[in-house]
Length: 400
Image (cartoon, rainbow, N blue to C red):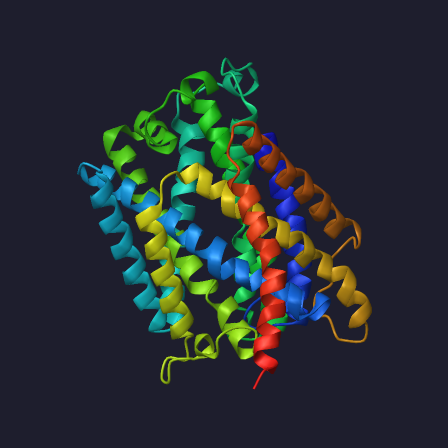
């Protein structure tokens, strides 16, 4: 509960800063645009390099694989490796094609899946506290589970990843009507709702089930809780909602994140074909197809969900430290530019995000090293490699 609450507040602080940056620079690419304006082409290139090679394909592959596992479990089909991979690949292809057809199509999918997710989480919270046979003593009693540094690291990574939708929202600012007025509302209200729902859902789980019993569960906790409240039918309905929620998260990544290589190509920092838009649909179809293809490759080589989660979360949030720090830089560089929204309690709000994220990322890296998982280090090494690659790219662009 401490992690959910602390990183909820930290994420809200980051979202407030990004709301200012999105209203100041309402262009496709989001964080990439902020880094380029604040620190120059090299920093923006490295962020885009990471999104193309590390964070986006890994996130999409992870979500697609989990979606396949949960869907097969719901349908009662044995979840063999090949079957999971085929379902995951089908999901990626379906949503990639939907987003090539237009941002409106992808946004509609997100609207429907978000409605299902919010309704399901509200049902869990209200059902547990109004009709569940739980006990408040479960929330306050000591646990019997032996924790570990590696487990804590995975928990931090999972909580951070759950909350990071506000990053993706900034990337589609260029396609939002009246972004100067709406982006702050979208990001701030969205984050407040998300944090409230997740903290409420976790309180509901603890109310219904002592943590020692929870740790021994082999199926989704939400299904166990809803089965206790509303019987097997309630458990089945909540599993449908979970599958829909994962599908929506997968769609959100495919909708927003291709805007980064698209923006890079438009700025001449990557191959120009990635900046091509569909002649009728006006979507970055080339970037979408490339991202989908790389994600499919990742599905075929995917082995461990937790390892991949810590791998890309560390890299992405390390970059976000600098992205939120762009608020300080652009307050000086663009002091005269109109800001439809200004970060409240500046500079303390962005400082809370920077400090909290440094602590969180450090905890993940240290915890994973303790259990012999060096994937976050490899991700950071790939990030550092982006700087010489950018230098080489500039030399190639200058050569005849």
